[in-house]
Image (cartoon, rainbow, N blue to C red; front, side, top):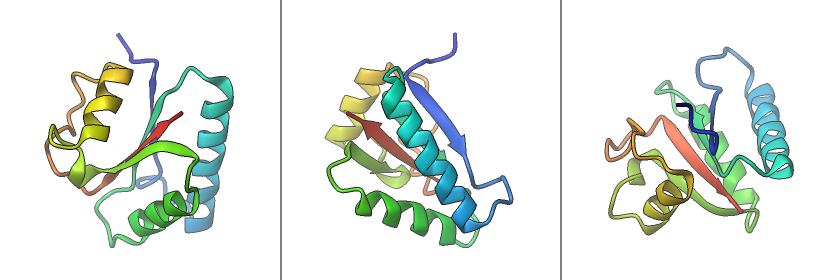
Length: 111
C-alpha cells in the first residue's frame, strides 16, 4: 500500500536546471502544505557533484520556521529525534534510506 503521508520528489535525475529544480521544490512544498495530507517530502538530489544537494539544503535553511524539521539523509537514523518522530508521524517503517547515511536525499517534515 502506498504511503499517502510521504511524497518523493526526485529532482536529481531529471536533468532540470538548478533554478527549475528549486522551483519544482517550492511548488511541491507549497502545494503539499496547502493540501494538508502530505506530512513529509523526501527530496532525491542524487550523488553527482553535490551542487544540487547544497542548493536544496541552502534553500531549506532560508525557509527558517516553515518546517518542523529538515533531515539530511546522512542523519536519518534512529539516533536523530526528528527523524524518529517524522517516521512515526508518517508511518515510514519501510523506508529503505533509514539508517543508510544516504547523502543523496533530504527530508522535509511539514507542520
